[in-house]
Image (cartoon, rainbow, N blue to C red; front, side):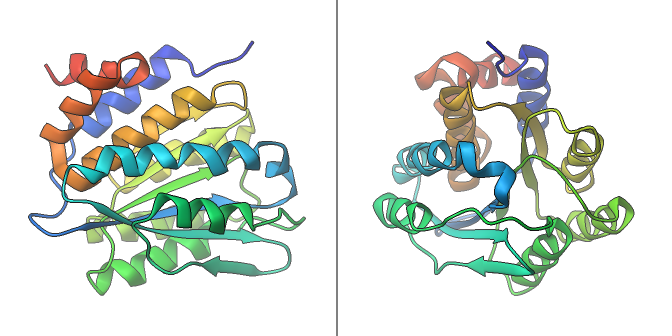
Length: 226
């Protein structure tokens, strides 16, 4: 059975550990962005359950506001309202149905940049499996986020060759982090997303505590930080 490769988790942990604290005081804001094209349909139900860990990790750290974004179909990009209620986010996600269409990663990154310029966003999580766009243009948009200081945490499903080259570059250009997973490792993805939420809500120290308390892949955070 395939799973997250340990070396990939180690690299993700190392990159997150190097990030500065996000917001000093107040509630942090995270954009949870997903590819909802037809290729993701088999794993969408998993995605609807793993987000709960993000709120659990953030609730005791001053809280985390999340906005769901997804693209699908013909030129469709939708963004939800901000919510700090895990049940509300789960309801929003469960109402989404995957539709055939091309990826819109560049457009998604541009939207994130607009939100950052308005001081309304602290971090981005992106979950996807492929890219059907001009990779140089997507890289340009990622570079703009890097200049704005907005990290993107990229989680790749599957083995698409273009995505395997591009997604780590998005993370690098935005000073975020990258990790690969598949549909057989939802628990590991859940814990890694929880670690990102801990970082977004409480910075480096919160990330350390989350890794110590949760074990498994998340425990690697603590070992790397030490």
